[in-house]
Image (cartoon, rainbow, N blue to C red; front, side):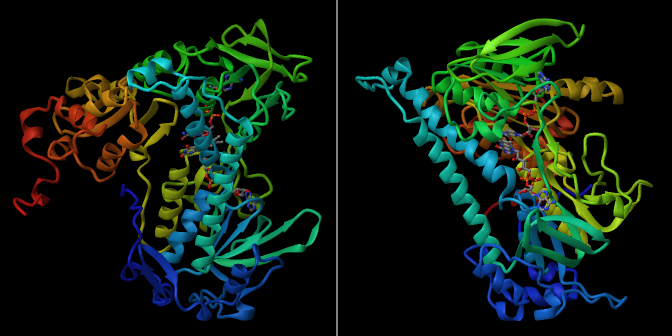
Length: 575
Ligand SMILES: Cc1cc2nc3c(=O)[nH]c(=O)nc-3n(C[C@H](O)[C@H](O)[C@H](O)COP(=O)(O)OP(=O)(O)OC[C@H]3O[C@@H](n4cnc5c(N)ncnc54)[C@H](O)[C@@H]3O)c2cc1C
Ligand SMILES: NC(=O)c1ccc[n+]([C@@H]2O[C@H](COP(=O)([O-])OP(=O)(O)OC[C@H]3O[C@@H](n4cnc5c(N)ncnc54)[C@H](O)[C@@H]3O)[C@@H](O)[C@H]2O)c1
C-alpha cells in the first residue's frame, strides 16, 4: 500500500503526454500554480472566469481543441469531469490541473459543498467566537491570569452568526477563484451519468442551465447530507440538523442533542459557552462511542461533567415532535436501545439531530454503468477509489471520493482521496492510507487521533500473537509549560506502539491544540517512520508539541527497535 502524497507533483511526473504538454502552460508563483497561456486552453475556460457559472453546455471541442485523443479515436470535451465541488471535488480538480489535465467541475448547489458552507468552516467560526465568551466569563481563569473585567462579557448572537456566514462565503469565494485562476470550467447543475464518458446536468425549472459534456475520466464527489432517523420530524425551527443550527437563528435555553459524535460535541461546546443547557441522547451505552475509551472518559470529565450538560445513554430518540418557541415544548420520546421499550419523554426548547450523515448519491444513474450503492447509499469503491460494479469489477475511468463512498467522512480525507484518484488516472497508482489520516473534534479542549484505539490495538495484537509486544505510552498536559502558561493544562495523550519494531499503531489526545499536535504522528505513520526515527525530532520550547516529545520519550522499545530507526540510513550525520 502506497500512502498518498499531498504535495503537488512536478511537470516531469505527469504521465499523459497531452497532460505534460499542457502543464508547460503553468507556472508556480508563490507556491500556487497559475495558468499563463489561457488562450491555448479551451475558450470555455474564459467563459467560466467571466461569469459565476457556465450556463448551457459548451462542448470544449466546439471552441477549442478536444481534450483527449486516445488510440481508439474518441475525443472528449475534458480529460476529467468532477461531479460535485465540495472540498473533495475541489482538491481533485486542483491536483488534476497540476497534472496538466483539462478539467470541468459540475456543481449542483454551492462551490465548497458541506465543509465550506454547512460544515467545518462555519462551525469552527462559531466555536472560536463562543470559546472567547466562555473564557471571558470564567472569572477564575481571568483572575488567575491577573485580568479584571469589571462586568459581565456580553455577546451579540446575530454578530456571531454573521461571523460564521461571512467566513463561509469568503472561503467559498476563495475556492471559486482558485478554480477559475487555474482554468477549471465550472458548470452549474445536478449531474448524472448518461454513458461511460458522458455526463448530463441541469437544474429543475431552469431551461437555460444544463447540457451534457464528455470526459475520459469522471469522479463522483457528491458528498453527504444530514441523516435523520425515522420518527424524527425536522421543522428547521425547533427540531433541526447542523444545516440549520449553523445559522444560529436563536439560542434555546435548553436544547437536546441527539447523538454524541463530532457534531453533537462541537455544538454542545458552542451552546454551553453561550449559556444554553444541553441534554444528550446517545443510542450506545457510552458517551462519545467513537473515541478511544480512556480519552472518552476524560472528555466526559472535561467537556460534559463540568458544564450544564446531562445525558441519557443506551436510549434512542424514537419520536421527536417539534414545538413552538416560547409556547409549546419539543417532545422527545426515549426508547431503551436494548429492550426497545419506551422509557421516558423529554420536553425541551429545541432539539439538534446529530445522528450521522447519509451519502448524497441519488439520481446519479449509476445503474447505467451496472453499479449499485450499498444499503445506506454509499458508492462501492476499491482502494484506488475506482467505482466497483455489481460483479465486483472496477468500472473503467469512473471514480468516487469523499463522503459519497463513506470510507472516512472527513474533509481532508475527501481531498486526499481525490488526489489519489487523479494520480491513479495518470498512471501512478496511489492509495490513501486511511490509518494515517488524522481526525479532530474542535471542542475546548480539542480531541484528536490517528490510527487504532487501545482496544483495537489489543484485539489485533492478541489475534496476531504479539500481545506482549504492544506498548502504551501516556503523558499529561499538566507537565507542559505552554499549557500551564495558558491555564489550559487539562488533558492527556496516549500512543499505542510495537515494542519490537517501534511501529506507531495509534495516537489519541485531548488537550490544548491537540488537533494541530496530532500531525507529527499522522505524518510519521504516513511516511512509515517508527519511534526509532521520531525520538530524534526536535520540538521548540515552550510549545504544546513538547507533549509529543514526552509521549515518544515514554515509549519503551526493545533494544533492537530503539537502536534501529527505519530511516536511520537517510539521516545526515552532520550539517
Ligand atoms: C457541521 C459539520 C462540521 C464538520 N466539521 C468538519 C471538520 O472540522 N473537519 C473535517 O474534516 N470534516 C468536517 N465535517 C465533514 C466534512 O464537511 C465532509 O467530510 C466533507 O465536506 C466531505 O466532502 P465531499 O467533497 O465529499 O462532499 P461535500 O462537501 O458534501 O460536497 C459535495 C458537493 O457535491 C454537490 N453535488 C451533490 N450531488 C450532485 C450532483 N448530482 N451534481 C452536481 N453536484 C452535486 C453538492 O451540492 C456539494 O456541493 C463536518 C461536517 C459537518 C456537517
Ligand atoms: N471535527 C470534525 O472533523 C467533524 C465535525 C463535525 C462533523 N464531522 C463529520 O460529520 C459526520 C457526522 O457527524 P455526527 O456527529 O452527526 O455523526 P457521528 O457518526 O460522529 O455520531 C453520531 C452519534 O449519534 C448516535 N446516534 C445515532 N442514531 C441515534 C439515535 N436515533 N438516537 C440517539 N443517538 C443516535 C451514534 O451512536 C453516534 O454516537 C461524522 O461522520 C464526521 O465525520 C466531522
